[in-house]
Image 1 (cartoon, rainbow, N blue to C red):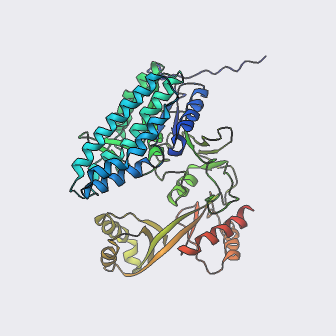
Image 2 (cartoon, one colour):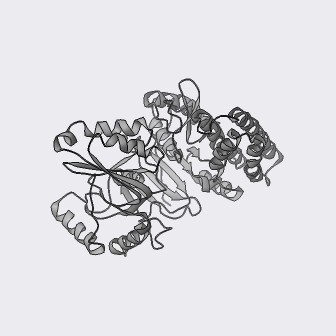
Image 3 (tube, rainbow, N blue to C red):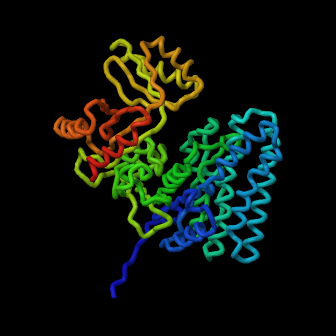
Length: 465
């Protein structure tokens, strides 16, 4: 019999550097069965990992909606709207021992009281109050992480809840806060490494953090993946695992393309571009903390852990010039700005950024030339004011109800021969479309929103079937 021995490197704190950070999404903890599956996955891991968890599916939306109801004066109605979700948490430990049920009851009651105080504070105030929205929105992850700690303990694991606000420090841009990395690294290490040294299993909620003044912040919807990679980078983890409800990153949106298949491996650049273009299983910022540290990410299906999933690392599996996946961003408004070559080369983009920032609207560059820039953004009430600002820079054309469709693959524009080959296939699909590139890993076109699905299916047929 051969014995496989694993020798673990240890840092100066006596902590193994073979740390795995495991993040579980909202559909991975949507009910008692799902929580049990998560516990089995964690227990099967070779060492105690660090666990990050999202809110139970639907909870964050309900919390934000309750704030809006309360701001209109309906505090009781707002509170009642959350009761079904409190009950969902209570039902998770129905079959466990009395101690677990009592801990869960206490957890939910404490959250109910804190949330009621926030709803009362929101009465008569505008629902877009960022500070209140972040405070109430954080409760979904806080509930899920505390509940998972209870479940893991019941499975015999030494789980310990860690408040993410003690680890991740951000600016005060509520709803889209940016981490302050040097301080975040230090705080995360000081909170988590002692627990690992004591062979405890840290459990954190994703998505939320704290500003320097201690006020709760959030880093954008879906940012629990980002929390996981921030923690990985701070600890120098050997791997980050994202456990979702799909088999990794797929070649296209499976809701649009029934034959979409799992992409076995992606480079950091490919994954970042797919996230930017709207691939749902990836958060746009999640790769950033890992690149310099070369920490790989594996995306798995928590409902089918035996399947292979997708590996994201600093290399790609195929030769440059192949399309790895098709992504799309639905329902955007495109803005084409044409000016003079001299202005486009000097100060043009800075003026555009200032206008969008002033109106608090995010945008993406989807094409550029010597005399023009093409942008895309989600429809917003302030678009007419932005358009008025932009007319000072040049002529402006706005097209609502559009969709961005992108082909992503390493080196699509690496050589003229590769580009000609890919463009020839794209012209065969629809010769009327214009394709542009904003990096070496993408080719992008914008189309009327209603025609995006047909184009994506045709692209998938051409490149993958």
